[in-house]
Structures are given as C-alpha cells and as structure tokens.
Amino acid sequence: MFKLMRFSLFLLFLITALAVIAGCTRSGDKAIQIKGSDTMVNLGQAWSEEFIKDHPEIPIAVTGGGSGTGIAALMSNSCDIAQSSRQMEKKEIELAKKRGIEPKEFHAANDGIAVVVHPSNPVKRLTIKQLSEIFTGKIKNWLELGGIDKNIVILSRERNSGTHVFFLEHVVKFGDKKNKNEFAPQALMMPSSQAIAEEILHNRAAIGYFGLGYLTKKQKVIAIAKKDGSPYVLPSIETVLNKSYPISRSLLLYTNGKPSEKVTSFIDFILSKKGQEIVKKMDFVPIK
Image (cartoon, rainbow, N blue to C red; front, side):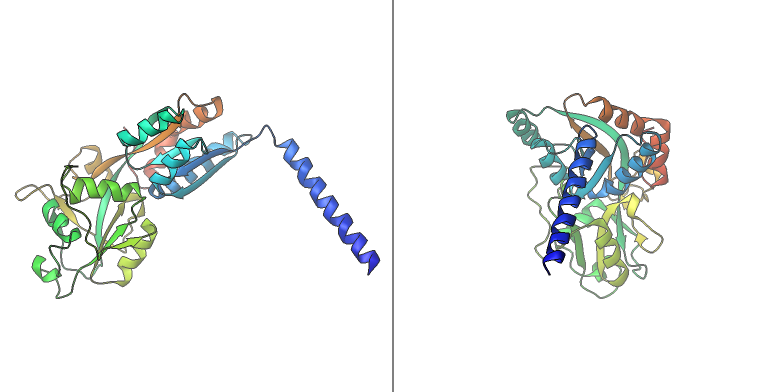
C-alpha cells in the first residue's frame, strides 16, 4: 500500500512537471482567441484550419456564443477577434472606449438571412410586412397565408444573437429602431441556428430564420418581397451581392485597435482570394 502511494505521488509529480515544461515551451505561442457569432463560427473554423496549414506556429481557438458574447469579450479584452453578424451599437462602442478598447471593424463576408419552413408547408412567398406580423404574433394561423390549418410556431435565435438583433431591427421593426414591434411572447428562442434547422425538419407548423451557411435542401426556403408589388426573391450568393434580396447583411470582425502582427496576417488571409473562396465554399457570400 505504501509503495503504491509513493508510486502515485511520483506519477503525479511527473505529470505536473511535464505540464509545467510544456507550458514554458508554449509561453510565447499564445493562440489567437476568436469569439462571437454562431452564424460565423463554422466559417471562422474553416478559415483557421486553412490558415494553420501555412502557419502552424500560430494556433487559433474559435468559439461561438453569439455576437453579443464576442463583443463583450472584446470589451473585456479577453479575445483577439470578435466575430459579429451585426454592427456594434453606438452605446457598445462608447462603453468599449471607456474601458480603453478601440474597436476596429473589418468587413469579412456577406450573408442573407433565409426564412425557412417545413418542406410540406404550401406557403412559398411572403412580404416583409407579413413576416413582421408573423413574428409579432398578429398572424397566428397558416390559413391566413394560404397554408394549412395550424397555429404558427415561431422560432427565433436568442437575444444575444446578432442574427436575432438584425432580424428584429430590419424585419420585425421594418428597419426603424424607433418602431415598438417586438417578437411575440410565444416565440421559441433557440440556442443556435442549427437548433432552428433541426426543429424545422420535425415541425410542420414552424417558421424560423438563419444565415445562408446553415441552409440545406431539407428545409423549404421562402421567397421574400420588400413590399406588396415588389418581386419575390430567394436568398443566394447572386441576390445578396446584387442587393435584390431584402434581408442581407455584412459579417464583421472587430479587433482592439490595430491588431498584432499575427492577427493581422490572419485577417489578411481572410480578405485574400483564398480566404474569400472559403466564404463561398461555406455557402456565405464573398465581399467581392
């Protein structure tokens, strides 16, 4: 028993020593910390994996949590890059500056927010006004839109999501921040875009929204018109680039002032032809 205890203590000492040595050898090899948008998390991971092939000496850690989480991390100086599917608000920038943080914005990609329903849903197209009335709860049954006799199940991203904020401001509130419209109390706040995608597959009465990168052939995407009489447009790379799709946005990166040399090299890669090819491969829209 005593010998076993001595061996266990020796093993613990050896593991601790190895950990310290490993830590010392990596002390100058700190990973680039990227946090934020769930819409962009897979895109950020794809950029990182390709970048590391040519720069194995620069480790990168990518985590989601929502645009608000990334912006909060930037303001607390706990990340190098905040990924955001919305622009920082004026009050966020002011708070950041009070904390000694100078947000610098980079336009990394574009996106269209797809509105999706179950494949069996006969509704094919909606106006922004109809969408607002659905998500505020004014339109309650699919029959009102020529669909099935079922109460509409509203799926939304949670409030910390940049996609939630963008959809609220540009669809629910018609692009007017002073508009008092809000999501209906019965709206189900989903933890991720993937959660919405999966719920749509199993719920014939549901409607939700997420970035183009999460759209598959398993969901039915709705054509959207700005108003009555306007053309109904489906989201795609072409319609986002030519701005004919009404619910389009920029995908952004934020750093604290001028980034370090290694962070700059990563952002330069993202904005390069190779980085923008990854944007397209991930079903988002390049900046050019």
